[in-house]
Amino acid sequence: MNPLVLRNDDPRLSPSINEILECGGVLIFPTDTVFGIGGNPWDKQVVARVQTMKSRSSQHPFTLHLPTSDLTERFAYLNEQTRKILNDFFPGPFTFLLWATAQAPASAVKERKVGIRVPNHPFFTEVMARLARPLFGTSVNRSGEPPINNIDQMIEQFGNKVELIVYESTASGHPSAIIDLTSGAPRALRGELPRQLSPLAR
Image (cartoon, rainbow, N blue to C red):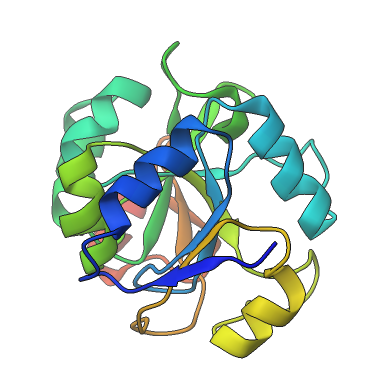
């Protein structure tokens, strides 16, 4: 299987993504940090495919990638403080751990918590926003290895396992910071706590 490789401005992109999400396909996509690999968050077979190709334990949930922050309250409970934080930091290079609602897909939930991203990248803010669909995702690599940002390496390692690669440059090449908002004061589980949240953490 040879994947279709498209850029953000390709007119074939939106219908191709819709078909992939409806028919159990896997895609590689750009974000503002690293490239992601994933698909339909509610498709158990797709979730299992990605777990297998990454050698990833089924005990590790995926991140739910949303095209706009407006969709967050469908999948996570927000209070005044968390709503303000998300308004300040979405879209951006952050994954926020929040209490999951019943509508949150099981692929992104563990211990009633869901990790949510709204990447600041045209693929999400323009393409996926038009489709109004979320994706589950994780970095493009085998578990324990560095994320892959090079198109040739993506094709070499995953080209025969995915249906689509959306290739656009990323902003940093570093994984998103993971900030837990479920335990009172915000705390960083990966990366650094943003300076703006430090007063809330005291």
